Image (cartoon, rainbow, N blue to C red; front, side, top):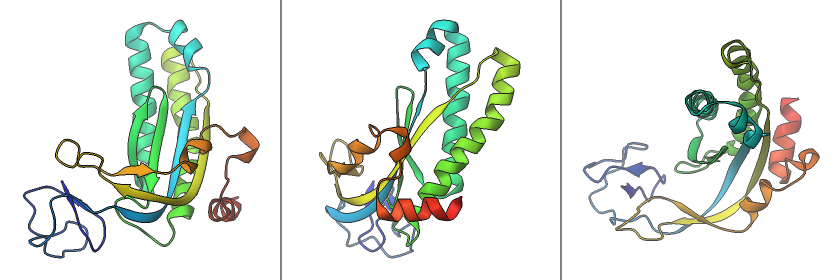
Length: 190
């Protein structure tokens, strides 16, 4: 994958034009340069996942968590975010990577609200199928990071280098929206 210098979109190595903006990629370097960006990040994790794992057999747990992850991915993608990774029972989603938009903070907050609403619908199905109800904690933060590749040849994907995103997942529930941009966006959705 190589990044477009104009818009930051990740493109397959065989692409001749950027899939995001259409700019020719002929003169682009194989690895995207490090870029300072303002991004918004969502951390969402299941409440009581250890107890859930102990109460369900392996196949049922796989089905429940698979449906949960797909529901969360769909909610993020409806708001044009990117699920960066699933870590255990947590979802990490980014807004502003690979493409920066003026309203990334608002999109992230709307996606977080959509994740919670989508979980309500999923819980109806899970209650009927497995007699379980899921709860999540969601943290949203917006700030500057440096995006680049740690090892371009081995793993050419964006890597965030900053300390602020880590704090979002550890904040107490009432202080989930920490940055001014995310707080303003959250207030507008209520």
